[in-house]
Length: 367
Image (cartoon, rainbow, N blue to C red; front, side, top):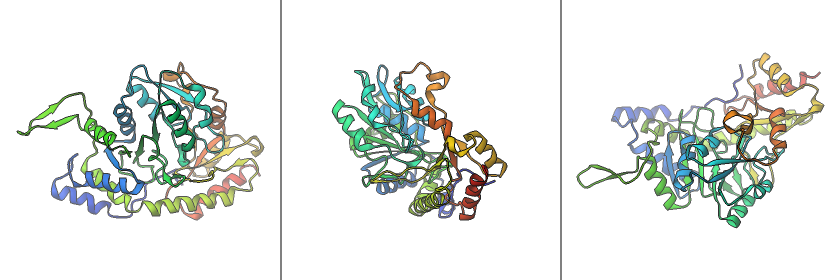
């Protein structure tokens, strides 16, 4: 089976993890925790970084840091993994679903303003599958209406918009290091910001809002959260980060090869890369149009039969039981993309031969 997206482990992971074990620094306190934050912040170009137990925790922490809660609304796409939407509910706020762009699959910034009310507190762009949202437009709208912007960059590490890393353009950005992401710690996440006060506040909340007194007692002035990553996983992350540029280069090369092989197949729409954007192509994603000859699900079945793992786009959140009553705009494109979208194998370790096999299967499935 050619897997959809698996980790690439080729560097100092074992060496650094062994160092944690040898020195007994395996929990949430240790040198690798701080080092991972510092190195990650340096890579993406943020002033502050706070490591978390997973990407979901980073998103929840971002909302808490900005004081978003009961009575507030957050504008978010429905075409996304459910995590960002759930975190909005975790803090007592309500999601408001906006449609997406057909070419990039991400939040359509031109549809945001029509959804803004007096309750709107933030916009949460989700850079799904790697392509950034139009952050220039998002930030213009946010400034006009005095809204916060929390970037869900969990799938877009390494992507850029006008030369800036995805996740560093809004007030706060959040990343995931799940096993299928560009770099992994097994489980883990990171919150980044260029506002030092937000960074300080996020770290405080993520470590149980703990203050250590002169006699080493713990004092808590408010409710905090246990969101910190263990030193063991941070050590793994430091090692992964050392190879992130190579991983990103490979992802983009593989996407170009996919484009080359799939570009002339009638009825297959390739992923876009808009002007002034660099897409990390976390997952290489295509649309199956009516002209192709068989449906999206029929193609997935043929790929799976050929021992190729493929997956449909995320199912729209607004159609799921917990969110059916949520406010939303016209979601025509969201629904269409779900019906047509497929994610193809996208591991860093994917070979050219494997890409060729995937593309040949797609080509031959309608011959």
